[in-house]
Amino acid sequence: QSALTQPASVSGSPGQSITISCTGTSSDVGGYNYVSWYQQHPGKAPKLMIYDVSKRPSGVSNRFSGSKSGNTASLTISGLQAEDEADYYCCSYAGSSSVFGTGTKVTVL
Amino acid sequence: EVQLVESGGGLVKPGGSLRLSCAASGFTFSSYSMNWVRQAPGKGLEWVSSISSSSSYIYYADSVKGRFTISRDNAKNSLYLQMNSLRAEDTAVYYCAREGGDPFFDYWGQGTLVTVSS
Image (cartoon, rainbow over all chains, first blue to last red; front, side, top):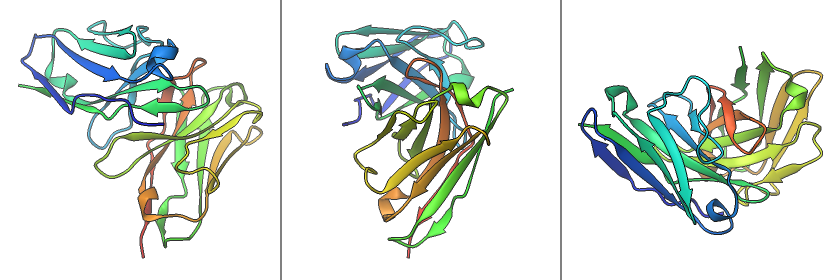
């Protein structure tokens, strides 16, 4: 149950696009189409942004999109806005457990 | 409106016990699997445990196996986490989270802080 690997930080200017990677193994990310992404602002509970690799819950902006290739999943935020500044975590099903990523701090310059 | 409200956190000495509760409302609690996820101060999220809708399937992270017990009472719309033999590394905010059908967490509570310290 090792944590999935994410970059510690990613930054971009307003309006730009950024991509956060999430690397696991064939036992988690690569083995199932059950990758989800969560946004967390300081002091707040996480919020679901993407589920089942690329599906967006109702109410989540279409500026957020997800994909997966092999053992690596990705979250792309297009048209970056100030409110997107937060921590982002990926999560994958791993059989009888779930495993989160190490987390990525997104900074809007 | 879906609501999850955790309670029961606090300060406990190493080796001690604590029972967390999560009160659910706004959905048919008995139809959903539920989970506990924790976050140590300044650290990332860590999945702790899950329980299926009828309590038939229960899973734990290796870090808490044998010390923590998850349970639920569908008649009371409540989820629980009994934590025994607590260690300093169990210090964290504990969130309860609803599993939205597939393995993802669509609703989260506000969290309850557990501090293990002498």
